[in-house]
Length: 469
Image 1 (spheres, rainbow, N blue to C red):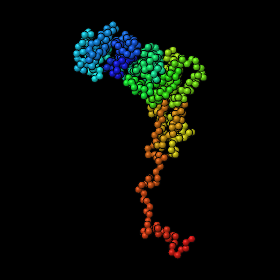
Image 2 (cartoon, rainbow, N blue to C red; image 1 turned 90 degrees about the vertical axis):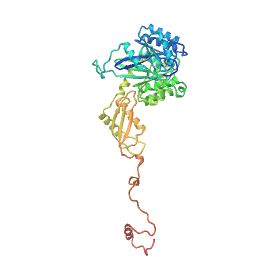
Image 3 (cartoon, rainbow, N blue to C red; image 1 turned 135 degrees about the horizontal axis):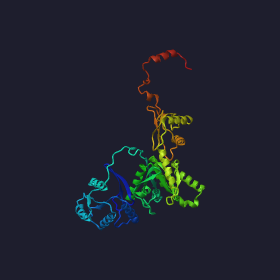
Image 4 (cartoon, one colour; image 1 turned 30 degrees about the horizontal axis):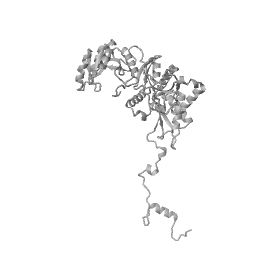
C-alpha cells in the first residue's frame, strides 16, 4: 500500500485471471524479522495460517539487500509447508541488486525468477510459472448463465464502514464465522480494504472490511492512514450496500454523519448498525431503544429512509438479521417502475398537489421516466425550465417511497424543462423580444409635420383665435 515497512497487516486475497486461468492470490504481512508494530504477533499468526492453507508459495525477497538471516527463516518455513515454492527476487532492475541476487540463489530453490514489481518486469514469467506449478486447466470462455444450466448468482458487495474502534472487523469475523480480520482494541488496526466472500441462502455477498475513517485534519498527519481512508472511500464507491457501524455506547457523531453523507452522495443503499448493543443492557427496553433511535434520526436527518438494526459483533446478537436487511436493500435498489404506471402516478400526485417552484410561473409535469436503478433515478420533463422547490422534490420522494418502497435507498429526482421555454423570472420586454421594430421619433421645433400630425390637427380644428380655458 505504501513504501513504509510493516504497512500490511491483514491477509488480503484477490482473484487473478491470467489468460484462461483463474486462481486466488493472497498477500500477507511481514512474518519474520524485527517490527515495532504492537500487533506484529497477530500479523504473524494470520500469515502462518495463510501459509498452511496455500497450494503454492511465492517467496518475495529484496535483491538490493541480498541474503539476510530473516530470508533463511522464511525459506525454512516455506519448505515446512510441503507445497511448491517460487523464489521471486524483487527490484532486479536496479544495478545494486545484481550482486545480491547471486547470494539469494544459495537458498536452493528450484524455481527462481527475477522481477521488478514496480515496473512490471518479469511478472508475466512469474504468472506463467505459477500456472504451470499449480497445474491449472484451461477454462473455456463462457457467457453468463451458461455452462451448468444455472444462471450466475448475482454478487452483492457490502462495505462495512465507520469510525475507528466501532467494531467493523469483529462484525466481519462473526459474519464469516472465522478470524479473518485482525481484531484489537488499538485504534486503526485495519489498514487495507479486505474483501471476503460469503455464501448465504444461495446468495453471494462480497463483504469489504474498511479502515476506520477519522476527520481529515487528523488523517493528514499519517501517510498510512491517508491511504487507508482513500481505500475505504473507494470501497464505498464500488459497494452495492453500505453498512454504517456506529458505537452504540457513544451514539452518532458528526464524523458518522460525514461518512453516511459520502455513502448517500455515492447513491448507495445504507443500513445503520448500532454495534455493542450488549453493553446497553442497563438501558434496554422499548423506551430506551426508541429514545436511541429518535436521537439517531435527529442527528442523521438525511438518513430517515435508512433502516436501523441493533447488533453485537462480539456475541453475534442480531447479526443474521443484518444479512436479511442487506438482501432487502440490495433488491430494492434494483426496483424499476414501468413508464406507464409511473406517469399515471405522477399525474395523480401533481393534479392533487400542483408543483411548487421558486419562481412565479406555473410548472406542469408533462412526462416522467425512470432512467436508472441503484440508485433509483427519475427524470421529470416539464413545460418550463424553472426548478422545483426542494420541499416539493422531497414530497415527491416520500410519495414514491410510500407506493414503491425503495427500502434503504436514496432516490434521485431530476427536472428537465422544455427546450425554448421561457423562465418565469426572466421575462423579456417588448423591445427585447422585437429588437428590430421601428421606434417612434421625437421631433424638435420647426420639424416637418407628418401625415399623422396633419390628420390629428384637422380633427382638433384651427388653433388661431381659440380661447384657452
